[in-house]
Image (cartoon, rainbow, N blue to C red):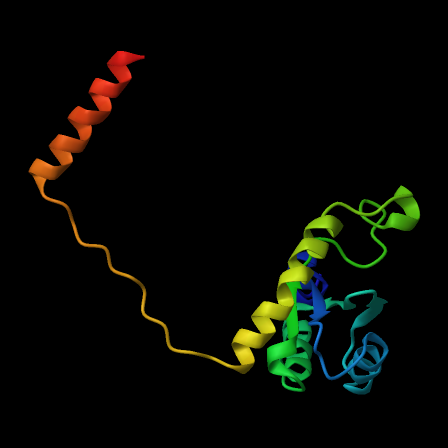
Length: 148
């Protein structure tokens, strides 16, 4: 068996379009096909699913994300397209993880906005309290616990 035939070298990635993406799911799939890479490509409600040799998949991701970097996201998927363990056509319901993806999608607008309009922020650094202050807080907590 050659290295390319090993299952461990295959990858499946979800390509998710943010709400303000400059292309639609169908345009995304068309652009993926136009790359001419040896991939399995499946159109989805959130963008596309691609499967193939890991290096080819990552090349496709890199090239597609360059079209609209703040609005095209990707995440690994553990199963290839059509896998009967996850395909809703075989299961008869939404696949596991779909509701998580739905929740994540609702946050993508904020992520897109932050990527398009980055702002420098400084975390609030809290000062340490003294040992005496800590002791006073602990004693107060212990006294209130003893009253109950």
